[in-house]
Amino acid sequence: MNETQAPAATTTVATTTQPAEAPAPAAPQQQSGFGMLVPMLLILAIFYFMMIRPQQRREKERRKMIENLRAGAKVVFAGGFIGTIVEATEKTFRIETAPGNVVEVLRSAVSNVVEADKPAAK
Image 1 (tube, helix red, strand yellow):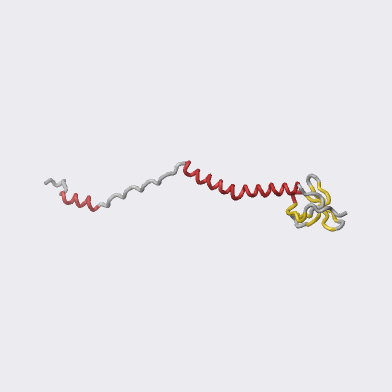
Image 2 (spheres, rainbow, N blue to C red; image 1 turned 135 degrees about the vertical axis):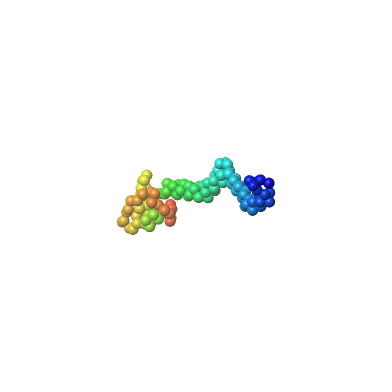
């Protein structure tokens, strides 16, 4: 045996005492762009039908209610004023909050109708 050659037992021991290489971690599966887009669109559709569309319907009904208001209707305004409509113009109402006290307010300030179609007292 040559001195430069190592005995076979030593080589075997050396290879068996070395730690085994850990297997490479599995690459995470990547979803396609379409796979991520579908749930997002579904969430947006649910949000639209549960939040936005009912609000648009309520606003449409409110605008229709305001357009149909005439003199004599008793209404509540956003600031808490309660009064009877004396005169209706294109953009404003003149309301009587107390006998002889007439105030002009914007149509958009109407929040609720208390009594409608009641003739104005004069």
